[in-house]
Image 1: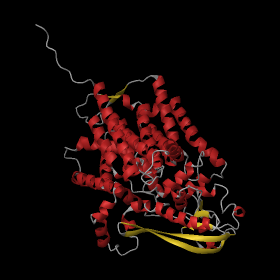
Image 2: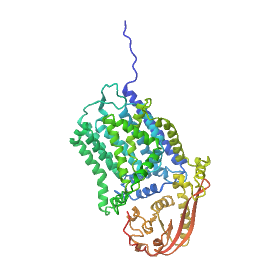
Image 3: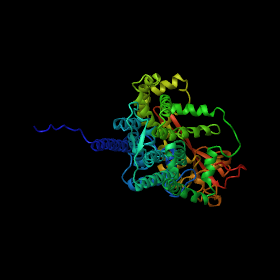
Image 4: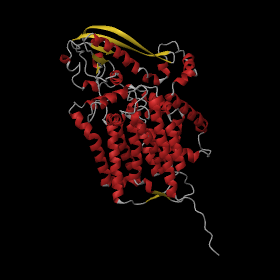
Length: 571
């Protein structure tokens, strides 16, 4: 009798390829949709910071006043490769400027999928986690706006993946234990080849270095890595391996090398700026309740439920005493705590500690799957999870089509209930997207004034008070000219524009007697730099039947240099 053949299911390798293909296909479709949105449907002009980084990309360098060069390099690549054909309905290269952010957002989401699968060994959970990340409002923002957070968070995420491989955690195999669920309580480590370990560590070093070129916060990554190696007994032996230190050396060479070299030639201005931002210089002023403000803002950013779930998942992971859980804890809470410490000295911007949540995402996903059907799961999280997911989805929709909230009466009703509907420009109190609207119209109004001046046979110098306004005008004016920034003449801090020479503040003799068209408020000190200043036009921007912005265009004649204010420079 012939033996009965038992049908076997798909091999693990075939299943892995299927899940990877599904994840890559989903990410590719998502990125393509974002590009279509940017070309045909996006109502938003460049944000002031985006325009500022675009202006950097016109003068490539190894570093800039406040940040590393990576964001400018990426914008330059996007415009150089795609600018001639990737334009929006108004004919601007906005989609090409934002193309790197969409790609970085897609890579970030795929990195979440890879890391979650590495840790949990459940591809379905990893795929669902990736989808949740793609639909989150925060990821929608960094996948639309080309700021430093787009490449920085992408590189942090893939550094987590690379670190997991380099540490050998991907080779940790489960030892049979009926009590284990997702993060197994016992492991054995396979010994990988020496060459593969070296490659993993060098890739990690390269990613960290590139991350430093994107945002200084990346310096916390090697600190978290060292903390994990020191705190986890089974990992301390890695501290004696040359590969670890070569990786850190490569990170320092790639990340710190260009920044230090450039700053040595520019009076260390980046460090002056960072120290001022962190309140590490100047008079000591303590904010005893700053940590409460910080915790409240971050809880709101995570919609409340996310913070509770992260805390519960962390407590659950602490009890496991395992490398995988320790890895995720080491790359989340230390980052959060560092910025909590700074909150006692200076207000913390909402996006500063956001890299902490990239390790928190797979940790929370593990906890939810492992405890969802257990009595120990906090009932509050179960009750609030779905409403929170709905709120997050609605916020994501609003960030893409903001006019719906006005047409449906949601924001006007909120303004009436809070008594804000009678205030001028009330939408700006409730809708952050208002700050991305109207810049093209302001540039068109300035161009009209400029043409009037040119008909009178003089070509005016273009200037603006805030650096973001100067960059917006430079981008949206038809010939994209240089627009000077008068930040310091208005008692504000240094910017990158003060380092580009010549400029009216550092080289007044080059501009003596010239006529300026200035956009934005002018202080008494700024007005004193001209023989006369006349208001030419008030530009009022309306959306949804409401005023959302107002700018002023001044004709400033006979420049004679700005008087010294006698104050120390602000960085």
